[in-house]
Length: 566
Image 1 (cartoon, rainbow, N blue to C red):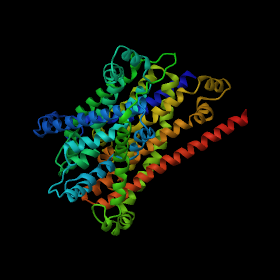
Image 2 (image 1 turned 120 degrees about the vertical axis):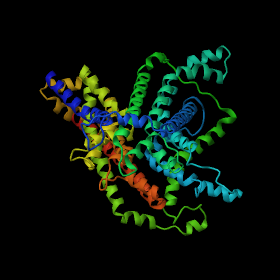
Image 3 (image 1 turned 90 degrees about the vertical axis):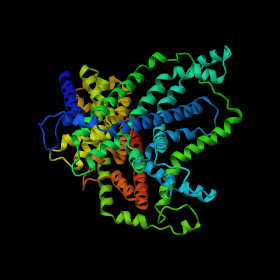
Image 4 (image 1 turned 60 degrees about the vertical axis):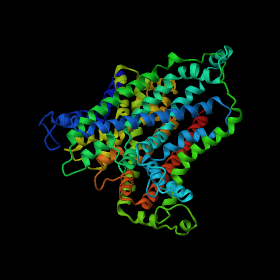
């Protein structure tokens, strides 16, 4: 039995290692190679060219400001929202759950495009409305700027930071704050001297993860930065491999190695912070409840601000896309605009062969990719949680390595990996790249589900003569349906909206929705872009609802089966 478990672990290490280590190794190999067609011709010229480029210093400066600025904004917003939700008597607390989940259903490229439609300096809807209302000669807002990029990226990363900080805030022991107040400290001093220091691991973890996500971000810099000539590392790397007659993949690989190393270090810091939470435990076995701070006269004003943030993050992007998909060109809502609404952009999209191909490709990658990804995640989570050997620890490290992958950088690595194989420029290459990059999104919910399945159930099946595979199929999997559904939803939605890896690996015939939408944005086809974007959001929502119904059906069937057996 132990031999079979060991073989399963080694097979999974080989598969996950090929998915995660191989592209990194090829990225490193490519950085010392003269070119894609010059394998074996090793050189340091690519490193010299990459790190002596005069433009690099400005790009790095923009990157630091963009990454740190957006992360600070996201963390501060999340901290304020978490405090209001868990520690105060603010009304309408359902809004906090909506703010934490729904924004993640809107693809980053569509969120960025929506803000370009709202606040671009030439014909942005908000700018035009303010200019008409107050007689202004120039647009008051310019989303095509570094502050605009920071605002949009910060709003995109805020839900993830909130999901990290809010549980820690909710679990805070009341006795610590009560002791502070007994000694005369007010609410603000207690917050600054007691609450925030104890929450330091969660806050730092949210901040570090935000830096990793912002460093890997491509949608916001591409849609909002490039029109304003604000280059950050992601767009700088993409231009190396896409602009001109001779793309320099070696130079991009050399520069990408630094970005990858930085991300790996940051992810290690993040995992260290989240694994040392026991040092900051404040809840013991005795009864406790979080302190509720009365807001008094600020109760309704703060509720209005949270509601306004909900509109800005959720309602406004979808509304502006829906509106733009029906009007002939970008125009401020008015009676004249509503009179000119038509289905023209929608019919053009559904008559466009490239858009239909991108739609089919994205659906294939979402459904098939998520199914394969969950199947692999199921076995990986089983080994990590149930076996707990040294080999299992190695498998876990390999699995979560992909959390460190900036999309553009690892896309270059996969380019080197696939270029001399039949998989180059195919949907299969995208499928493999997607599974490798988003494998942790499948493993995490399944690992949590495995923890809740007692070992006695598996042992009883094995004692009765069933193999581990039969035990997995007949006993374990039916009990893991909620975790499987969660993992499938996460992976399917990630695959459907994926952009950064796709822009590097996709070629004519293997385009996906996000790349097609980006192409419409580059061409200024805002109406067709908006129509296709609404289709993309609708498909994401439908996948979530369908997976939820299937999971509920299986769970009901499993419960009925258990009652029948009883």
